[in-house]
Image (cartoon, rainbow, N blue to C red; front, side):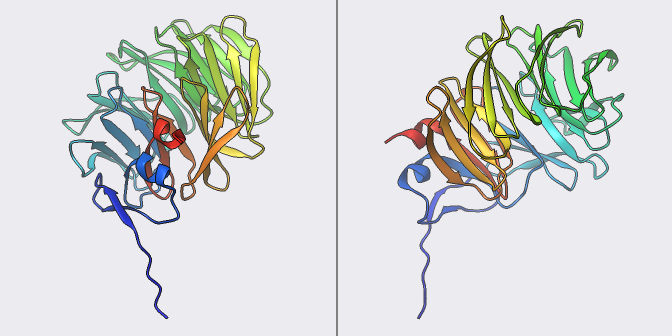
Length: 318
């Protein structure tokens, strides 16, 4: 007896045709905006205007996709510098990559050329971020430091010791405050200009994998691998809400309307309402370990066997 599996084509945004199988719900079929070929990305980022996606792969390549061009372009390649984090500049013309070679590289997207290398970290660079004026950047690494760099001269402005590995980083909208999540479960806030520690937020029992400023920078949300997400008041440093996902997580992302996306160790993506703590739905996303929101806080990316682009509002629409 022959078995036939039916699939529906929904979009074309890579070098392969995108299909969804019948196991996906109608809501998921509508909400999946795009899907790549099998890539297993090492890192993901969305441009500020939401039109481009950058990602790294294990062969040392950095790719960029745009909605207008269904094929990805390799903008940088260095097998000795496998990218573990990537970030677009505010104008989208450059990207930052941090890698296993302990360095940070500034890449011109159009020219596909390396324009600057920042050296100083002693271990893998796990997170990088531009400050809003794009004149300086910040980074954190397995060497247990947060560092700031001048994008004009390439010189290091400061280096601050964390006491543990640095895993994730975020800059608030005016560029004055820097948040860093550490391997021992701390969330640390720094003056982004001087590197002075302003607050240390304790509560996570394991590695912090995501920090995000929300609500006009009044709130900071964090996710730890123990499966707990926490909401903090930035001014007071007090914890306001706790979301228990009851599962070890590898990645997390936060929307502006209180919705949280987590990727657990089994590769499943789950959607949560932070206020109520209720699970709102789940996706099977092929060993997903990366969750990244666009600046609209509605479109988000998941990275696993493939890269998928989702519309959160459509996913939650009944």
